[in-house]
Length: 77
Image 1 (cartoon, rainbow, N blue to C red):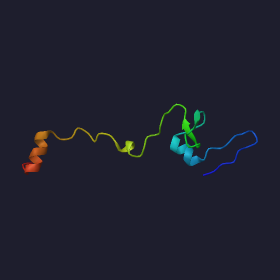
Image 2 (cartoon, rainbow, N blue to C red):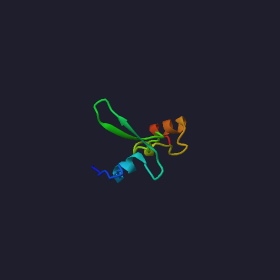
Image 3 (spheres, one colour):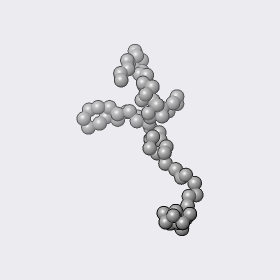
Image 4 (cartoon, rainbow, N blue to C red):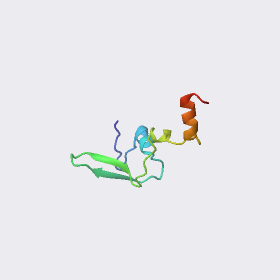
């Protein structure tokens, strides 16, 4: 992805990058120079959007007791 710098030095952050970082109007960002000379854009508040895997985490409910699971595996249920 690329962007064009305006005469005022402004750049529009591409939408896929804004979506990935969770950047909305008013979000502060940092620019950091990496050891290899590249520049990295990060959110200043370091809040990361939930990954697709973390969105899957959770609890499905109470679940079965150990006795109930054992009864099911033995065919007693």
